Length: 314
Image 1 (cartoon, helix red, strand yellow):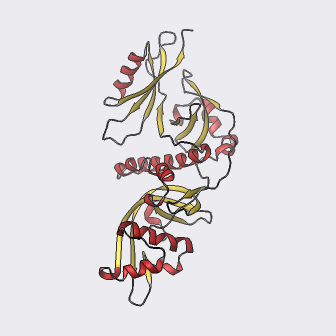
Image 2 (cartoon, rainbow, N blue to C red):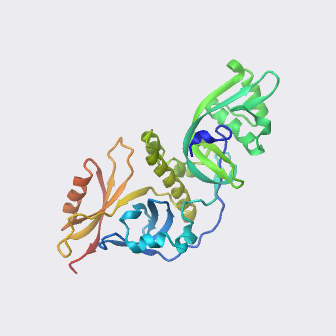
Image 3 (tube, helix red, strand yellow):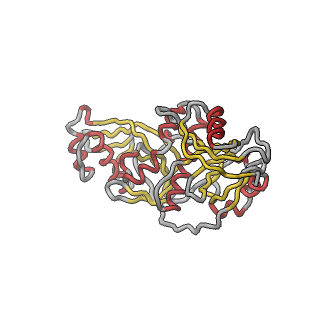
């Protein structure tokens, strides 16, 4: 579902219900070949990917096809659905910079033009809808959006209206970048990033540049929106510092049991690129060889942390 399906323009936010989550014991996950195992908590999953949180709190996305038969069966079970409900759909309480809090869930990234016009007969329309017909909370947010772009400060709709009456054609129009939010009643609205508190904005903006760079690649954009929802859910559950979701590649090549160790190598996109961090599991007799093997598969990447994950010779 795209951002242009909003009922009204760029208006609003959602918030996160302060539901407490009881973490279950970490589950052991295994790659399809049985070479690599790790313990992690299930955060979210869709038809192609699962987002997990490892013991060190790192968030990783793994292609479901690269997991063992047992893991794939687990993700289809009622137990998995009961743990996290599959697609991340938890209502969260999000805080705006102004202190306003709203309950809802993230749906996807998007951008939309917001047009606010003051008519001579005394009506103010927001994207062709009378502002007086909007819920009170939206009426409170619209002036904040307009004030941001105008470098003004409006305490309420009346002050915004007075300013609009002095503008050319008594209207303003701006392109807003943000997220789609679904409220408890099922209504969906858009909220620009700049209205959120610093902490929540950090969560929501992750992946936005990758989403934009995908342009017409709808599948990639859907993937980034899925990561956005998973990130929000993980942040809500952890109530601690936010971590980037890294993709993990478990397709081990050239592995000869007993001759090599397995290494988890973190690859960071080259500066200026919007690619997602990648964790790859590769064979190697030492960390240097593991690094070389990883770079052969992903040339140009920068090397992050490296850790031995299994020694088959012991």
